[in-house]
Image (tube, rainbow, N blue to C red):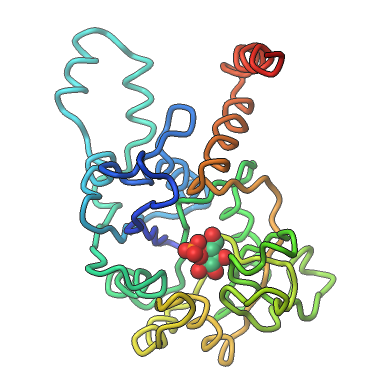
Length: 294
Ligand code: G1P
């Protein structure tokens, strides 16, 4: 199963981190020195993804600019001999033609956002990556999933999962745990999924995180998917439909997951990613120590 394309749903309003996201897309919030969206594109690229599909909305044009070249900046850096900065820009620049943008015209939910990418994805398996969530690990979460997918047959679907405290299960998609096979490592067969189960009804404490590998048959289901939890067209509900026809596996990935769409998660991610950077680690540790002693 070759996964060439990844869909990034980036139309959300980012209301959990206002006022930062009043005029700026939440995907452009900076963790250390890169916008969130750059981290997830890098994660996808490391996993072998060749085409990056962004489902955007109004007010998100700057994401498109971020993945374009900035001629004035390039020319100025070149004229000033700023080689290190030029290398950073070149490193992050996707190849021409490797990015596509389409708009979700109304906030109808994650399932609807993914459906908006149907024509660009076409008839092949693809990844979905939610940019709110960063996973600190090498190899990245998507690379781990693609490696896991290699152990499965064609027409398999995968979701990345992580245990959350029982009192938080109602905030996530939750999956039940079915059979485990010795050859599959930490992977297991998914036994049922439910989007934001009412408190006390979750089938497990394993939450669906923001990484999926899906077969294109999901689009047919999304086309007629009814509104679910929160009145939105939910990807989880369409996956429940698909799981009746195809296999679904959960992958317990390695790495620390950060929910950067919340204020505490965003701050924690800045510290975690800063501390993981050899060039910043010691300075950051010294600064934090000062504040902790206050
Ligand atoms: C979405 C998904 C949910 C998943 C979550 C992970 O929910 O619908 O299944 O657990 O992302 O962050 P949202 O955060 O958009 O409410």
